[in-house]
Length: 228
Image (cartoon, rainbow, N blue to C red):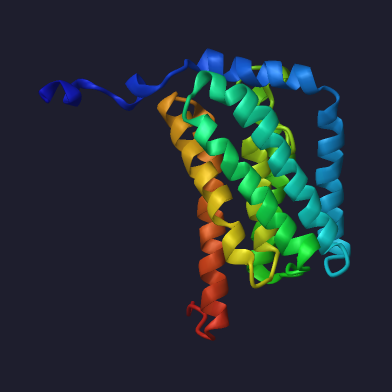
C-alpha cells in the first residue's frame, strides 16, 4: 500500500500534453472553416443578449443546445475518448445539457437573458473571454493557432461561454442548466493542471467569477447587500 504514496497525479494521465494538443490540431483541421461560423454565431449571441434579450431567448438556447450536442459527439466521443477512456462516459452529459437547453428554451420558453447589474456584467466578461480570450491562449503559449480552442468547436470555450450566458439568464429551469458546464470546467482545469499547462487557470477562473456572481445575486435577492 505504501507504493501508492509514490504516485503523483500526472502518473494517472493516459496521454501526454503533446498528444492532447495534437488532438485539437486534428479536430480544427477536420472541421475548418466551421470555426468561422461558430465564432460568428458567438458574436451574434452577444449582440442579441445585449440588444434583444426578451425576443431572442429561444434562438439563443437552441443554438447552445445544438453546439453542446455537436461537441459531445464530434469532439468528446470521436476524439477525446480515443486518448481518455473516461470521456466516453462524459460525452452523454453533453447531450443531456443540449436536451436541457432545448427544453428550457425553445420548448417551454423558460429562459430570458435580461439579467443586468454586477452578475450580468460578469456574465458578459466570461462570455467575451470564451469567444476571444480562449482562442488566443494557444498562440500566446507558443502552440500556434492550429491548436486554438474555439467556441462551438471545443468544449472549454463553449462551457465557459454557457456559464456566462446563464449568468445573464432568468428562469425556473436555470438551476438544471448549471451543473454540467460547472463540472466540465472543473474537470478540464484539473486535467490541464495535472499536465502542467499554464492555462489551467482559465476554466477555474470562470468558475470563481460565476460563483461570485451567483452569491452576489442571492444576497441582493434577499435584500441584504454587503456593507462597504
